[in-house]
Image 1 (cartoon, rainbow, N blue to C red):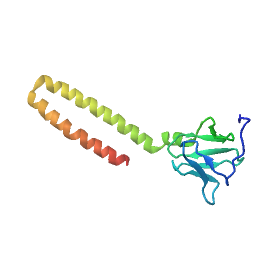
Image 2: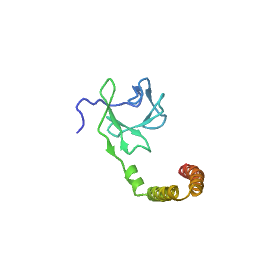
Image 3: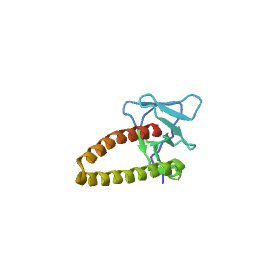
Image 4: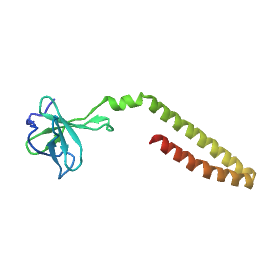
Length: 147
């Protein structure tokens, strides 16, 4: 249900940014959207002219605001399909499998390490050096794969 004190938002006026204290929203030329001169966020004017919606590809909820005459007030956030699409995507499953395999490998290494400390100090040293080499390499490869 929409608040009763909403005022129409006009593209030709400037408004205070709802996300940045000193920011000013100005119309982006040839669009029905506003851009903030400080935080560089983009807000799209809804068809009714009473609300703006922040465009954010990484945020799973739509942030919508209305103008009350002095400042923007946030409306309740609704989930978008972006988050749920990611959960059902192939890359999410691959990431989950990578995490599970990393956990399994870590458990295996810890078990080997515990057994080595009981049996031989040389095996303990070799296992420690191997862990010290493999873990940073795995982290670097994972970071390059994510980027």
